[in-house]
Length: 395
Image 1: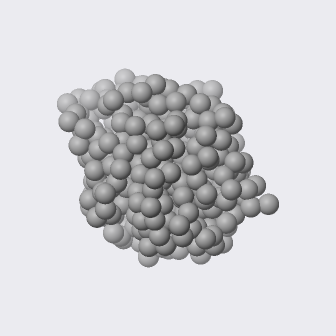
Image 2: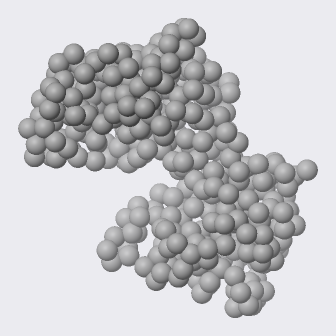
Image 3: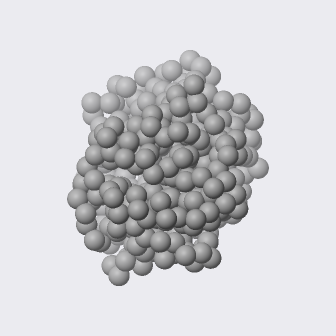
């Protein structure tokens, strides 16, 4: 896989696929521009080397049609402020007007194409659409780690038609940190896996068993593991069809000598509502009509002690229904435990990054991944389609 620093981009049309899928408020103001800031090193490098910079992204889920509320125009304004340059907003991402706009660019100019997903061909990975995108570039740069697990035209097929393809700095950084954590980690390596469903994390869990020294489970998925261990979990969310599978995961962990941690106490509520009656109970005493909403304080302490000697920590997914303040303590405690550790800490996916920003501990985490699904795909041991396309293009 070529890197942006390996290729000549001076005076070239550089098509940079990024992830500017930022949250907007009701007035279409950007609520969090961290995804834009994360890509700035690549964009500034291209501009410093006198490239003609064409930037492409998606925003939201327009489902293949032009939706004005999902235009990238607010991003163009913010990007212009951050780059301290004019960013010209294209009316589309393909077509004669776009070609005309790009053909008139000078070195150091910046054009932001309109939302790629306004065209259904993008998510269908159609060759003709990819060919049209590639026709306005001399060099293609993938710096969109967060969508590199998707087989989209601007991520995969485009590399077949672009004269030269390479990885941007953000994509390189994501892959490098993940390699440090999983391929050659400082040990002990601890993985914290949370979230709602075992089914969504099963491949990741099975792959983790080949790498980790400690595995810590939280979130609603812990209920399925607790049930497999013989505990009654009341009205809690459980994947009954995976109870036996969860038991097998625990058994495999034991056979490999992996320390496997499940909650020892939980916060239960009569319903998942911030105003509902709630209490803390040992896992042996979950009321039959109540549901688990978070890990309890004893579990938080146990997990903190389990992480104490870890040299590498990988975390994906919250410990409870943390978006409700009443059930956020377990996740917040975990953020602090990870932040206070002396380990290399890598966090991503499952809204875990939101929890870290919420607690103000961002600067104390080694690396916060910009990708949710892409991060999970790496945890599952998969090669990302976007990365595979760059590797293939380099042959």
